Image 1: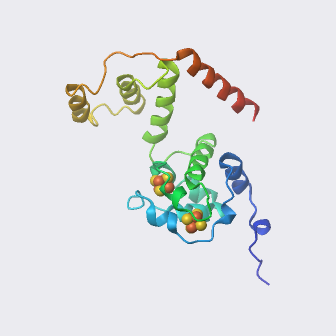
Image 2: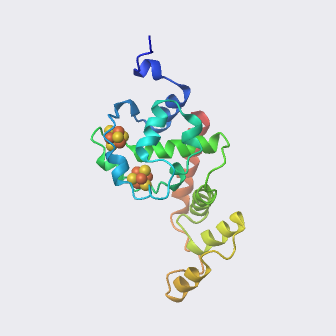
Image 3: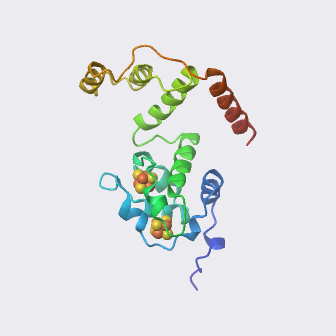
Length: 187
Ligand code: SF4
Ligand code: SF4
């Protein structure tokens, strides 16, 4: 007799890790696909948010962690807002990205984690995002020196970019980073 699918029979290390990172119960999904219908990036991705949720439920670790979807997700939360079961799908995407990075899985779009890491480093240095510094750090990290150059020049000419940083609330921001590091080390 075929195995009956229940949360117990579907249980996997992967779903436990996702649940731990996201604090979401994906078993609540009843496959209405409203999340997929509203996602603004599905035209470019390999899987829809609905398929990622199903991938998690069925323990498809490789599929989820190697997908384009988790890196193209903009965290706009349209899926989260639309889900009738109140699953925070955007948080599940976040959790998948965190696990992929922790497990050393190469991102389908390496510029995305590079952007996240560079932004955080930039904020920890200046207490807020210093855009010119962010652009320079990101260019050095990705070695892509010419991309979006025209846009950068236009922003500069329209006074949208400040050449020097204006550090803000440095002590408080550094305290937050220190606290997060402590939590990560003990969890
Ligand atoms: S949060 Fe991500 S998965 Fe959800 S709708 Fe927005 S882009 Fe799509
Ligand atoms: S909107 Fe919620 S319940 Fe519907 S398919 Fe997506 S995750 Fe499942």
